[in-house]
Image (cartoon, rainbow, N blue to C red; front, side, top):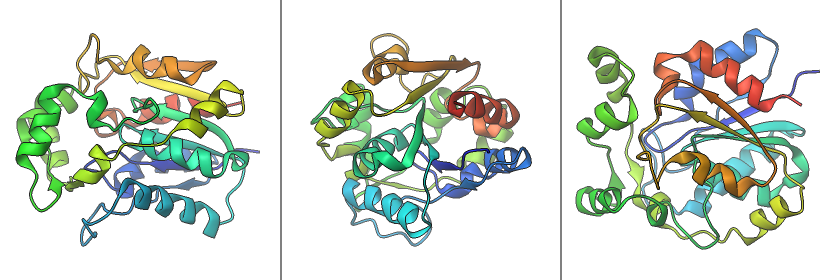
Length: 243
């Protein structure tokens, strides 16, 4: 029996961005859910906290009676799935972090990002929301696409509530669950992903090393391969999520 998948998007995205991947997973028999985190998308309330975002996914799972599912988080979504795992560890078959944040207890995303990113967020936010600048998207996030593909993808992005990047998270329980071996984890790393610059800020092994005994899955590509390599990404998500 194939496991259901719950796919949690990153900053500047919504659940709709997962559709090319969800379609490929469904073709091979998986049930797939692609919720949008509270605070994201057209008409979303910008006055939200990170806890509100987590609660929206916990409610989504509970309302649908989901159990024994693979929970995937991309980028910022790693902070959401970490807190969801605290709330309902018994429901989750495996956590998959795709180039995703695995924060130290008490830190925010901005705490673990380069100073240039922190300054960009604080200096460019409008009414509590931050939109990623085109040059950063083009050079650091979707660096494996031609310009028309990158432009088309950029037009689909939405602002991110600054709270999602600045709220400091109590992750003591998450790290206790990891240490106790109660959460099975995989880390999917795209090797050309420079949204976190290579070196001391690189996604892997910086974040993957915080997951204890963890399956590492790698593939070529940028931070946004769902726009450029959906077939390969779907296959790697299945590899990362399998028993």
